[in-house]
Length: 135
Image (tube, rainbow, N blue to C red):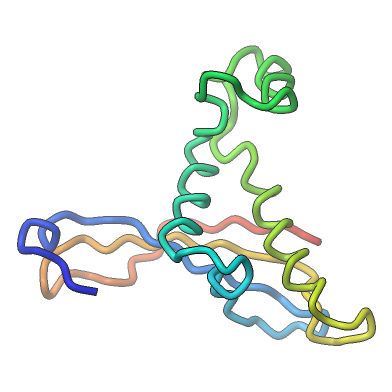
């Protein structure tokens, strides 16, 4: 990827999706291979889920309206209120392509956030946080 000089100075977060197989092996799960969507669109799903953006649209899904009401309003929702749903969906897509008896099936999916601080010699792999969803 090529970035302009201005973009090189700004830091940004990026995400790595991994899964744990039934036999305990950790594997990388590039979302583009799961959904056939553009890479940027997959990661914008992760970012939107982390920031609860699906609750801030004009007409949120009724399930989101109900969840927000249960917390006393959308401003009181915990961060990443729907991220587990996204992780489980990605895991279900992966598992749907394997036989039920396969040891490569996933038992959990993990999203790791990293921070790139910017600059040409910036720190590229500063771990920020992680979320895991059991399947």
